[in-house]
Length: 405
Image: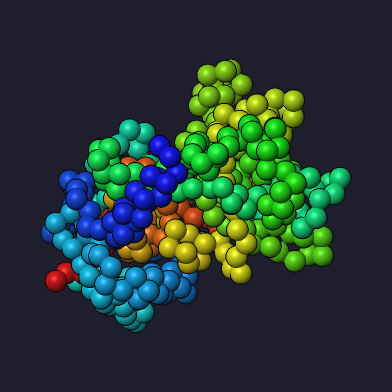
């Protein structure tokens, strides 16, 4: 299709595409918590319904309220057959914080929350999630890379901003889509064609020397992992931290490496993990570029004054922000998560696993976070957060909380 026709379709569909992000959810998972049974009851060894500090919870709630205030009356926020306006979402969050800040015993707080809120269970038996109705809980983090704003012998692996020829076109409903999908490509000789792949960018250098470089880093594996996480910090030679965050992808599908590496015999099935994948790439420089090319999805970045930023274009809160499929679950919504977290010894090795229960806010999404049975927990910044995020692949439960009408 010629670019003129593509642009006309884009202009016609853009209003519908924009509103679709806030449209009511058409179908939700079947299960829901009702009656006197508490969703907190089956948490072992937690000792409380929330294992983090109240300050971080207040910050995360405030960010969701900020989002709703900006979003205004654009669309509704729905869980199955219950839809709420932005004002009702704000009222619910404010009431929740009032309860959490009251000077009451934990069991009284729990009872008050169950009296005033509906718990909607968030999944319905998905592959890999474990028990019927559970979700698969993974983690992600914000890495810190060493880099420079200028290219040197040490810092020679670039982060690129969006190339000027990049074109984003919503997929027409006439093709059987719901209007929320989009085609990302590039303009070439008057036509829109697929964007450059990771191989073309990293190996062939098709973007080099065009002034698109934001910074250069010293570790190609760390840069590859930054593409997976979506945002991070770059420590410059003078010590200043440069925030970089997701701006756009090249439109190619995300493909994880660990499964492919098991098939090739590079990792053992019982040893496939983020840490093992990272270690193999670091230890085998002669093979890593070809392996990394398997994930053709490439991320273009932008700088930010703060970060990391989630899908709501607001900062994420460590331990409180989650990523889900935002085509299914409402942006900014309050939820309760129940799963396990790793406990590390002094050498950074996992010594045990601890069950926990925690209130979280739906602030983000991700290319690999698709369907009702996936949730990604933002674990924070730096090495400890990386260890935690890399280890988490746990069956858990997720309940969205909405105030009773």
